[in-house]
Amino acid sequence: QKEVEQNSGPLSVPEGAIASLNCTYSDRGSQSFFWYRQYSGKSPELIMSIYSNGDKEDGRFTAQLNKASQYVSLLIRDSQPSDSATYLCAVPHNQAGTALIFGKGTTLSVSS
Amino acid sequence: EAGVTQSPTHLIKTRGQQATLRCSPISGHTSVYWYQQALGLGLQFLLWYDEGEERNRGNFPPRFSGRQFPNYSSELNVNALELEDSALYLCASSLGFMNTEAFFGQGTRLTVV
Image 1 (cartoon, each protein chain N blue to C red):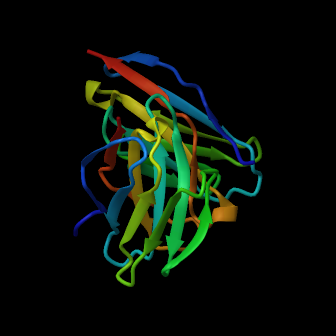
Image 2 (cartoon, chains in turn orange, purple):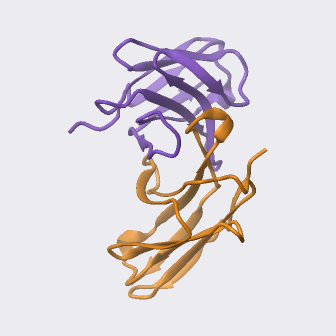
């Protein structure tokens, strides 16, 4: 059974700081990784996808992938109060095609 | 371009009744996924449809079922509703092949009383 593990948090950072969110996964064969942001009561929103080892940057967001260590992280630079949300890490369930297996999410709180 | 749309937004049913939830994928997407998110719990995979066929299902009883129509829209049926079925039901769509990005609709909040 594939597992995706995340610290539930809450992770609290001051406005303007860097927030670091981590995720580990159990299946060494995983090839793609996704980060979703979910505001309370809303649906998940895709914010980053990463397929290769290394870093991928998109605006204030950087995803980092290390397949050898089976972890993927998300860095949020210059954190804003509007970044306060739950961040979900997801990996495709290969036995179910592209259906994603989600971690339970890390709650981020950015204080102004 | 329209995103994934779900209806209804809210649904209140009585225990033992049936609920039908609907989903329209992004244009061009052939895969539709259903997830359940109960309060305080993570997203649990329910069902995956692609090209009109059920491709896989998660660890849910058979009273959770659905189908995909020729236009790739989908419906989820939950029979013999139980109180613990109260949750946010999310539909997502993707291009339908490995490792592609999936996008979610706004969800249907099902409350069983």
